[in-house]
Length: 327
Image 1 (tube, helix red, strand yellow):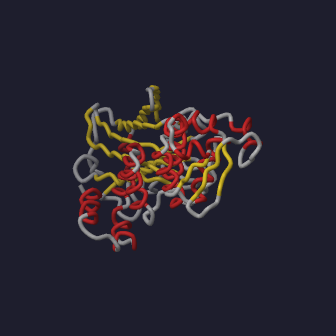
Image 2 (cartoon, helix red, strand yellow):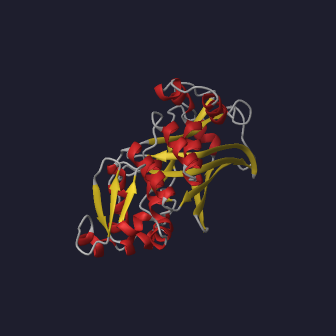
Image 3 (cartoon, one colour):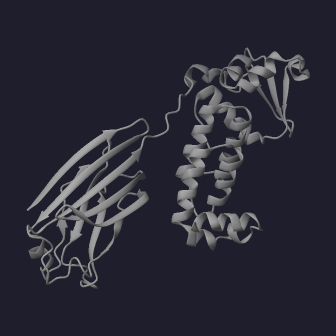
C-alpha cells in the first residue's frame, strides 16, 4: 500500500512543490526476488503538462541488490521540450531522515529517464533487518521550478511595416562595413536610454541623422533592430551571434533584449560553448545567466576540462575556471 501527499507554494520567482510517498510493508517488498518495480502516482510540479513519477526497486538493483536500492525520477514521454528544476529527495524511517539526495539542476528531455541517485543500504536497509516498527518507508521530494523570465515585448506587429523601411524614417544606422539601416528615432529612444540621450545631444551624428555603429556586426545590428521593431530575435542556436547581441543589449541598455538573449543562451548550453557564454555573461553584466552557466559547468566539468575550448585557454583564466568548476 502506498500513500501520496502533495503541497505547492508559489513565490515571487519560483514554484515549490512537495510530495510524500509512503510505502508500507516495505520489508516484504524489498525481499521480493523478482526485483519488482514500485511506481508512485503521477504528479505535476507546476501548472504545466509535465507529469512525473518515482520508480523504486525496494529489493535492490538487479546487478548488485546488496549494495543499493534503485530509485528513479521519471518524466512522462509526451513532451518534446526541455524541463529544468532543482530537486531534493529525502528518505525517512520513523520520521527520522536517513538519507538526502540533492540536485541543483535536473534536466528532463523527451523520453529521458533522470536518475535521482543510487541509495546505499549497508546498515539501514540490510535485507535481514526490519527498517522500523511500523515498517514504513517515506520518500519526501521537494521540487523548485524557476518561473520563466518575464520579458515585456514591444507590440511588434504594429511596427512590422516600418522594419527596414525608409518610410517615415528619420535616422540611419551605419555599420563598419558601410551597410545602413533606416530607423525611427522615437522607437529607438523608447527602448534604449542610450539612444534617447544620443538624440538629445549635439553630436554630429544627430545633426547628420546618421549614427555610426562601428563595433557591432551587420548581423547583430539586424537582430537588435528586429527586437526593437518586432519584439523577437532570430538567432536560433547561433550562440556566437547571441553573445554579441547580449553585448549590444548591454551597450545600449535594452533590458528586454538582454533577457531574451539570456533565455536563448541558457537553452543552448553545451560543454563546447559554456566557456564562451560564461565570458559573455561576465563581460556584459548578466548575473542570472552567469549563475546558470556556473551550475552547468560544475555538472559537466569532466567534459569541459577535455574540450578544445578549455585546452586553448591560458592562465590565469584557465586556473580560475578550473577552480570555479571544482570548488
